[in-house]
Image (cartoon, rainbow, N blue to C red):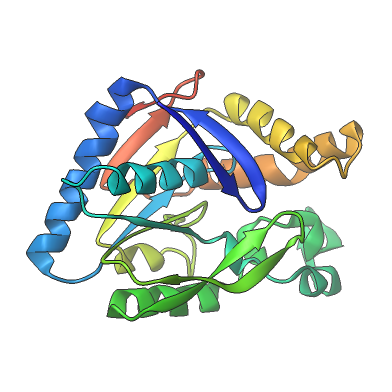
Length: 246
């Protein structure tokens, strides 16, 4: 099933096999919808995966799938990218990595470059059932856009790299979810996907793209793969981009 969408200001295309759609995704949506009916309140699911795993695209595909099937409960897909700290803040603050002090902007995308307190506050607002303003991240602006959408639905899917991360502060987030999903992808497969994504902006020379992917994205990939909790549902991405049960 072909799917097109816009993510962080960029157009994205994807394709999902009938086996994945009918064997994993539609049953998942049915299960979440049934949970919502049984609990009679907003249900929050979290989907965690390393950078480049296609989680944002998959989340929006699940939203479309739910909206196009009257037997399913409509799902609202949102992401944690809008909780990046602003670039000016990242440029003005530093972190020590491998014995060297560097601006946070050099490792943008790492857990330390997100406003974790603000993210948790908004997740708790979602859990309360309140209509909740939600920020989006715009890759063309390189900054969040506050209040870009208003979350009002009864079934919400939040996606992000670090939602299942087993580190102080982050590990508490999963206790706020009704259901969790984890996707694992081999590091060597993610490298190519991350390189293409970074190169698409056209803002960096090939050598700079390589430096960013090797120095920033891949360390984040390893951090997610090596230090995250399992989910209630665990998936694996194959080289062709298909998702299967792990």
